[in-house]
Length: 249
Image 1 (cartoon, helix red, strand yellow):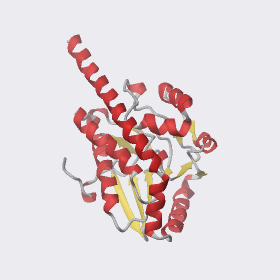
Image 2: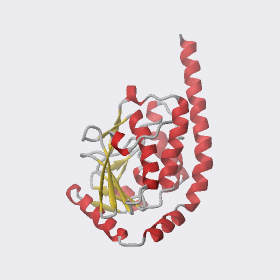
Image 3: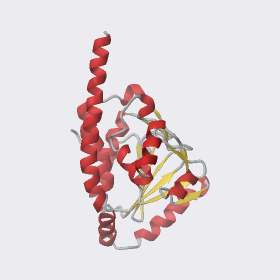
Image 4: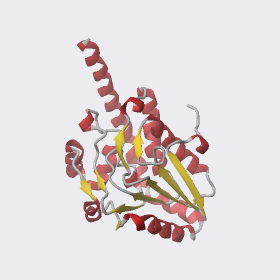
C-alpha cells in the first residue's frame, strides 16, 4: 500500500496552531460524502498524526451543517482485501492516538458514526443526530468496528436495537447516555473546542501521551479480537453476495 501524505488528501483539511491541530472532514469544502478515498485517507491521517511532533491536541470535525450523511456508492467500492487492510487501521489509529481527541459533531452523522463518538471529548450541535445507515439499511453486516463502539457506549441490548433498526439518537440522548459531553449552538461549538484544546495543550506532551494510553488500554484488546472476527463475518457476507449474484445470472 502507498502512504498518502497530507498534501495528497482531498477530504481532510488541516489547521495547526499552538499545538492544536484541527482536522476537518469535507467534500469540496462542503459536508463529507463518504467514499473509498475518505476510507484510505483516514488510515494515513492517523499514521501521520502518530509521527507529528507539532500536535498536542486534535480537534476532529466535519464541514457545513452535517458531519456525514451520504455515501457516493459507485466511488465507495473497494476490493475486500483493501477493506480488510484499511478498516482495522482506522479504528486502531484512533485508539492508539497519544494525543487527546476532541470530536466536534457539527450536525447529523449516519455514515460511520462510530468515528466521532470515539473522541475523548465529544461536543455536539443542538441539531446533531447519531445513527448507522451505512450497514443494515444497505444490506451490510455491521461488524467493521461499529458493532464494538456502539456496544461499548450503549450496552449490548440497546446497541443491537440501534444497529438493527438504524434508529436515531439526538445530541440530547447522547448527553443523557454519556457519549456526548457538551451541546453548543453551531456558531459557538468550535470556539468551545478550541478553548478546551488550548487548556490541554498547556500540559506536558508526555503527560498527555501517557494519559491517552492509559485511558484506552483496555480498548486495545477488545478492538483487536472483535474487529478481526467482525471483518471475517463481513467477508463471509461479501462472498455470499458474489455467489448469489453469480447464481442469479
